[in-house]
Image (cartoon, rainbow, N blue to C red; front, side, top):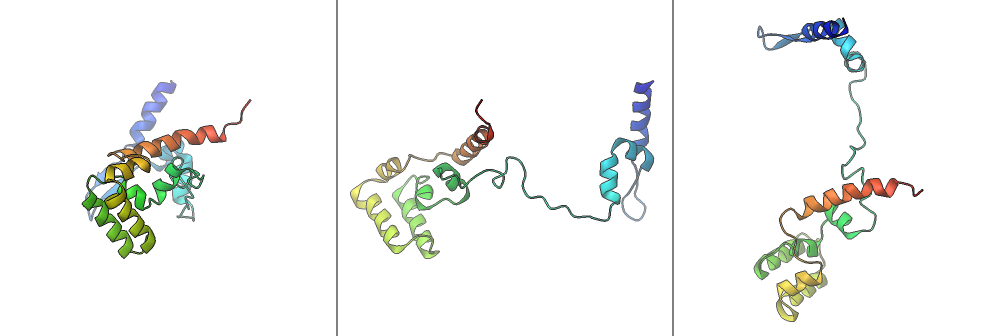
Length: 158
């Protein structure tokens, strides 16, 4: 009997699409209300906007200001974070020029990074000194790691 009731309810919810004067979808309101009462209440309610503060797993719901470097670099990568993706000195110098032009690094940092890459050591040494090369997929992996860490941060030790 209950199985019959469910299948009957599904049939009555199936929308009928009419193409007269645009697209119109009709449905049995009572059957829809029986199946999705909260949704229908929201649709029929006066308040049409819902403010969403954050979504579980989004950068805003995670503590990205925890002081860990991988957290900060996901939201606001710096000059070194960009250079760690470079394969040639020219790429690194172009990034430094761009960041200086946009005033995202100071002139002294610009000169220091450029000197380290060009004179004191090679680009590879500079990248290795600052955490290694960031290969494609680096940020996705760090983000997934951060999401996995979050439940452990909130868990109380027994």
